[in-house]
Image (cartoon, rainbow, N blue to C red; front, top):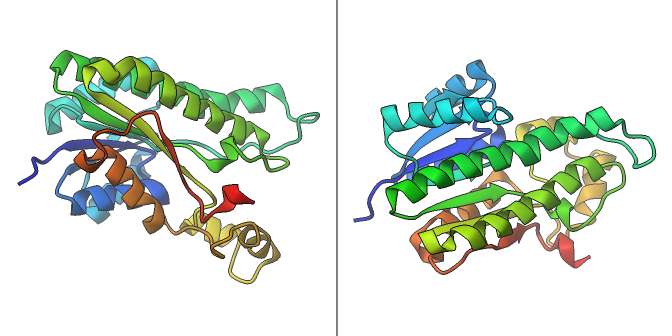
Length: 246
């Protein structure tokens, strides 16, 4: 029987984080959702049977306090899923305000770094190895006009993945990423309803002919965090219906 692990998922209040959490719970793991929004993460955790903690991943001290709480209440983290990220900044390279760009860097890049560093230090101290899975985006490899701030942050997430993977391999810590295309979360479905021109435009870019569901993303994360991927590290796995082929 596989030993139950403690899995910490940032951005756990959102649709992708919640879907990933449900998949780990189904696999028999203990899951802790982390998010900056206390009400939302508490509600999400209660709905799926997970635990919840509040953390601002931009703040390294807050990250340290979060991990101390998780260890105290649920045991040391075995698997970290860096899912937290924002897609709130749009604008062309000639028009985007630098402060707006900085806001996405602080969450998507610095936040991912803070969590990776803090969990890696604890995994090394335990000496039992572990796994980190970052949620990237194919946008880090395939540009869309107006989305460069988000996409360059996800290119950095892929780079952090490789950086951490090569340096932590000797400690038995594997670091990989899952890079989705557009994912049909409840929020995205509201903004791009079925039959809308925006939905049709995105779908037309995908050879498999549909946007990803959350259930398309979660199994890839669980796989990369598990024993079946024991010889895989430093990979950013596209889950995009073939969009990178176009």
